[in-house]
Image (tube, rainbow, N blue to C red):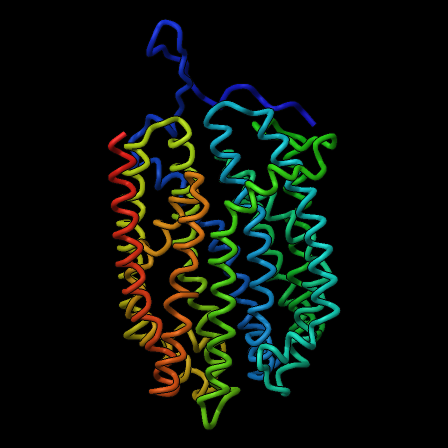
Length: 468
């Protein structure tokens, strides 16, 4: 593959001192809000297109197979999220290092980081695929999955587990594009996976009648095609980073650094899996009737929530790239400014979504099913849970700041704080005291409390950083 370029695209050279040339590009000089939005919008679009498949996937499963099928997929989704979190840990940690190395002009080192990350993704993917396939029935029991849902869960998770390594490598390639600033390439990978997945869902479920297994194979095949496109683009076009076979091996020091920086992503994604598992277990424990309906209702609510949440994730990804690049160039004031811009922008979006999902969520849930009991269950969950959603910008951007700047420990702690320290004990307390309603009220209470504490901590950190 072609060797990496030695300068950033469209960059200028200037002199701030007679002996010290400094590289400047748009990331370091353009107005923050406009550049942030131009970086975020393609990522948001790509994530929405990609996330649409999760949403449509659930619609196809619910309508083509039934309520128990979407319940089985919901019940096993925590396991799927754990695999996604491991992928995110490896890819996100690598991207954090890459963006800072590229900002500092260390392109050869970036090649080493990327190539060794691909190798690690393959090895770890094979290991976890083996573990899931051997112990899946034990995992189902650990998740307190009702027996009526387990056959559907098995049909869904088996093909996905088989191709775990492909998923992990795809995440590394996609995040490498993002770290380089080529967000359009990242968006195209996501769009290919999503649009093809939707088409294959229709083909496999409605035309061939393959049921839940068809939805899983649609996911696997679309992911393979998306990765093939990413590899092709890396091979035929010029990039600041390139894959080199000679560097495709274990690099213990680099892997430790990348994984430590990726731990916040792992804790965040795994926290979502833990939350889903804890909610399912709480439902089984406190609901006296309609357990399957409540799990299925929570399933279609969470598919909807994930689609609504993706623009915030896109803003966070753009923010991390912007912040890491400028921090590497010692532009601390711009780091603080983009943090403020990202929190305010995501906050405005979150308020608009909250109004809709509190007052009139039914119109979305009716896409999944005609079962009024299921729609009613999902609507009640939505009307309570979204009360605290307006704080999502603080809860996402502040931990992301520490990861982008290379502060692994505070990033990990802040990502773990909401779920592991606040949410789990609050969920246990409120569900024990107030039953099913207590489960749903846990989320707005924890969202507000966590955002206040995380926001205060980050404020003092940024104040100290900009004092430099």
